[in-house]
Amino acid sequence: MHLDDIVAAKRSAWSGARAPVSTADGRATPARAGTFAAALNGTDVAIIAEVKPKSPSKGELLPLAEAVPLARTYAKAGAAAVSVLADTAYFGGSPDLVAQVANDPEVTVPVLFKDFLVDVRQVQLAHDCGADAVLVIVRAVDDALLADLLAAADELGIDALVETFTEEEVGRAVRAGARIIGVNNRDLRTFAVDLDNSMRLRRLIPPAVLTVSESGLHTPNDLARIGAHGFHAALIGESLLTSDDPADKLRSLRGVRIAQAVR
Ligand SMILES: O=P(O)(O)OC[C@@H](O)[C@@H](O)c1c[nH]c2ccccc12
Image (cartoon, rainbow, N blue to C red; front, side):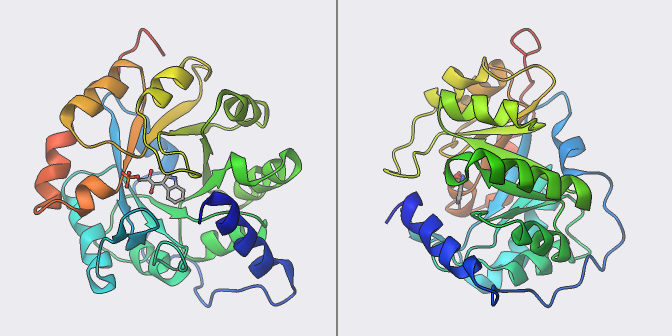
């Protein structure tokens, strides 16, 4: 099982007229302090803390009943944003879980709808769940669909975190006009993690674009490395989820300055 299988399954789920739709109807809570993009645009590396009930590489990470409370904990411990898995089959989340988090009054930070996007209707679904942003994985789409997904997000007033893994994908993201580009350190085909991927690709991303290093970040030293390379944010799941004290762990990863020189 790897990215290609997940994407194939998503395409077949969304190909028919009977694609899954949500009963969620927008955000019920008052508007959050700001957008997802604004939450990443500070002087310290912003932490995007992830609620990931399970993963293909690690199995179960979090009982579902603890998902919303954990999102609250993340917000209180200083996460800049929360990422919630909307995929059920491989990651144990759901659109409804995203909606629960996004509509929770104690989750005061922006929420990322984390799924494998293969159809523009998923952007609408994310919006209807109350999410502030969607993840778009460049490897899973062609240029036409990439453009359509970004346009749909713009129209709905939500942000897109455009995930890349290779130099070529960074080029495609930049040409598509992505304003937030993520570099995944995990190869979604082999699950191998290499932090150097962030370091290699960072210099290809223009200064005006916000940048996120994704996956495999565990220690303050890991954060220091990406901060020194000018990353605006870190997307962190496992190391928080497997910690005895996720709030404490999150706090220990905060406060890393973003180096300006390499931006
Ligand atoms: O749990 P980690 O290693 O801290 O990684 C978080 C996040 O980057 C990872 O879950 C992720 C990055 N891109 C994805 C795409 C789909 C599903 C999951 C992901």
